[in-house]
Length: 553
Image 1: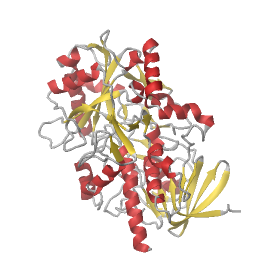
Image 2: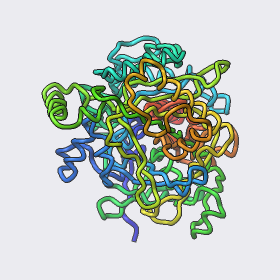
Image 3: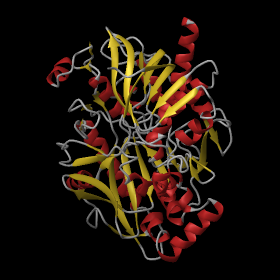
Image 4: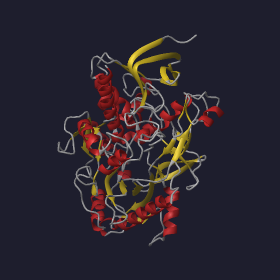
């Protein structure tokens, strides 16, 4: 006996960065009904007292590391054994309202104009920079003020990271000494340069997509939210979506969308649901006993991720960084400052300064970045997988990242159930160019650390031997200490060709009534963090859905 079926105009699967933005924008129309399904729990303390401690840590910017340890808010994915680095990597993904925007580092990053113009050249009509710039502006309230690049009245607060510690000023000056210019706003006219980061933080609280978009929208009677709702399968009549089945707190339910179902499950979740429902590579699905509804070869392919290659340095006695500020009396002072004023280090990020630069001066735009972290990170082996940990020494990490990797991996289901862990293969550094650019970026980081402004703060390197290490030593270090950037993208790529999973209107090719709106649709990973672009995708999806609704009404 099948469960009774409900009906809404739109059903959104996943209340993450994109899903919350999309639900808020669609439900702003009083004549539209929206059901938003989230596998995780509520991020509000009073609505979810059983998760109160973790929810409190989510809201405190400096509580991210502890919050991420709770499996109730983190899917806890890990990669297959990576053939180049020889390790299994931890791949955190949010499982709570706000998705990964509730457990990320809150760094505001938009990507470069050329990233989106490149999408347009791949056949993604309506996804060039001129098309998307209005979405970025309308989503943010930048506390520096509004201009032609930045918004001043959007739901997402963007604030300066401050207060900057002296070591952050030293890192900025060292970049300048190394030939990287100062840039007051790397998300303005030009991205090249070094600058204090901005963060998605409002009044000392994390501005996740849940806090920014969803909570205000939940006052509307036409928006229905269900947490702890585990989507099982999309149902079809032929190739037309007919319904969606999900388990809500132990009860099997079904729902029909009068217009469309939109997947916002991210670069792991969305291809998993497609494959479980019969959309993907035929031989792979048949091997698992799944009836093929539509052959789509690229589902789960084209997976991209940033690889962070990190260098750690121990600081001289007396040079303050996050480690000292989080211990003893300093920790008490920092906590009191935050509790009384919602300001201080607990209201910001452990990364305060970032540089976007070129490995070759002849390049037309930056191809790597360095994030200066106020802690010395290290990798810790837990079983077969490696995860990040904090070195007990007061230190600093120069975290480098190639912005536009060529390497392509995959993510696919391993079983029929939603609890079956996916097979995720990022394939880090699998091309010669990726290895070359990453090595050059790490070399530039050692040059910056050797500049007078920063060298006088450093006691000794923790990652490298003293002196000037050769390329073999550097490459060994980046393989040993590197880790994922938590920016998975591309596994349901958008494109103008028939092999792409979705078209430029986000419609799943070969299927009626189904769209995808999350980072999985990115044909090429953007040059920076992905949380803000994910919310932009939710914004852009609302434009597309409303325009198409008006056309067919």
